[in-house]
Length: 114
Length: 118
Image (cartoon, rainbow over all chains, first blue to last red):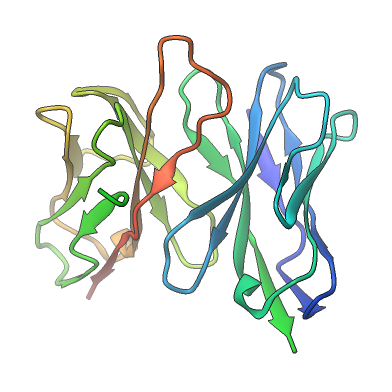
């Protein structure tokens, strides 16, 4: 069965610093997709970044980058130059290729302080 | 159309009552998903539709839950005889999946409906 593990319940980072949020996954399917979503206190899930299992390069989207280490089955999110507005819950998710449903981890609460 | 919308945003109901939630996806999206999120957890998949066809239901979706997408546009999720354990955020998401099932499409989420069963 597919599984996502996020071992950091909470992280603190100072404004303008970089932070890494950890995510490990487990699957026996060679084809999969990995996603990161941000969930502010308002509740909506905001898509941040995607990495496909066959992608040769790590994904980047603005200040977000994904450190994809396939052999270690890890897909860590790196946020550069943190901003106060980055304070939120962050979820790592995997897509089940056969059904397209997303399987989420338990999330990491990031707090950015001045 | 700016995104996925859900109604109501909040619902408080007494145990044993029936409730119905509505989700309006992004207009051209052919897939619609329902997830449930309890406090301190990530969203858990409940069910999804391809147009009007319901293609998969999670074991989490007991007989008291039913979902429809009658015309392949909006969807409703009904919970009958609510229990306190049904208290959660119910999230709807939609996506556009082409015949080639391109790998990088994402699911766009609505703001959720927070259900409290007293």
